[in-house]
Length: 146
Image 1 (cartoon, rainbow, N blue to C red):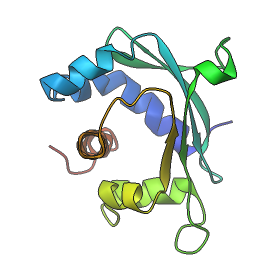
Image 2 (image 1 turned 120 degrees about the horizontal axis):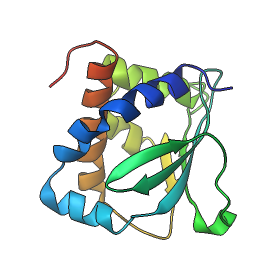
Image 3 (image 1 turned 45 degrees about the vertical axis):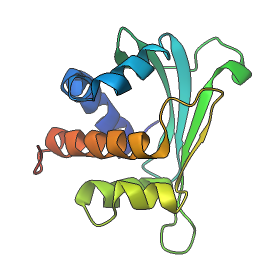
């Protein structure tokens, strides 16, 4: 059972058109290349979980169970802590949403890792998309946002 992180993704899913519509045109074109791809996101910690998504129709669809695709065909992402400052990935995500940790720090400290055969974004594009995602999450959760 997913904790707070799962609930946040559920709330985001309902508002994601705003997020995708605000991405730069070239980023949206690159996302089109990922159409019908599946992904697994693991967020470590008691409020985290394992989440499955399919990118379809220029939208991210959260799936209720693991899709019936070969493990090798799925993009895999991990959000984890460093066991020193952050014991788990859910703590990292909560600090990013609260604004006490920047999305760029998450990337540079390797709290977020990707294992995929497609490079959709270069590091700068990914950092910008992650920052936009966090702004949208803040709005979903009732905080300050764009």
